[in-house]
Image 1 (spheres, protein in one colour):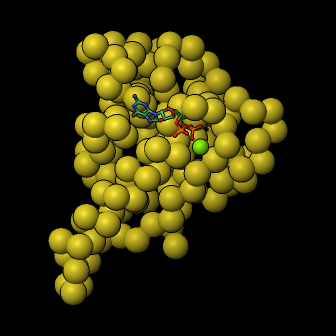
Image 2 (cartoon, protein in one colour):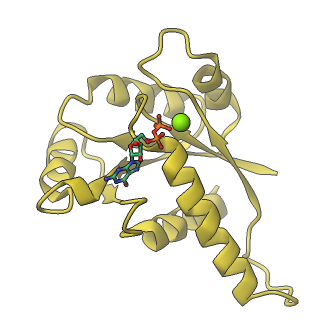
Image 3 (cartoon, protein in one colour):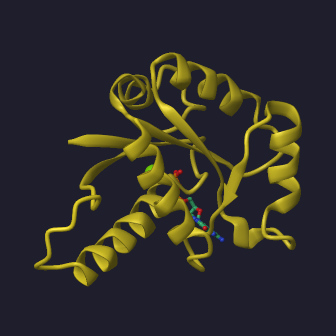
Length: 149
Ligand SMILES: Nc1nc2c(ncn2[C@@H]2O[C@H](COP(=O)(O)OP(=O)(O)O)[C@@H](O)[C@H]2O)c(=O)[nH]1
Ligand SMILES: [Mg+2]
């Protein structure tokens, strides 16, 4: 089964996002239940401890096996995350940058997404696991990346 890994610092909202995506998958699967539609992909979501934990084995191991990697960013010190993005790409993963806990920002995370883009050239998706904003879009992007791989 294809794996999607969730990376980011501790408390960046990885586990909450995993549950939000799981709910989304269940809703989606229910809508298509009893139908065999190609393109519906079953994936394994892999949670990790935190890239800010020294020698986090869960992140190190997942980096080797995930097809798609979500890298969560919550504030403007994201050097560690950028280093991990390079590492994940070298290991062959397709990386989606997520501005996590987007409900905490007045602008829904847009300024932080712009800052990430300025430094790295990467487009980020703003997602809130609490309000659900951006979860469907993220799910769609994951599916796109999985089918392009
Ligand atoms: N406001 C807000 N809080 C969040 C969101 N996602 C997670 N949290 C909170 O942030 C804290 C850390 O979340 P958690 O998913 O455990 O982070 P992890 O350590 O990266 O797995 C918890 O108190 C969550 O309730 C979010 O989208 N919005
Ligand atoms: Mg967690």
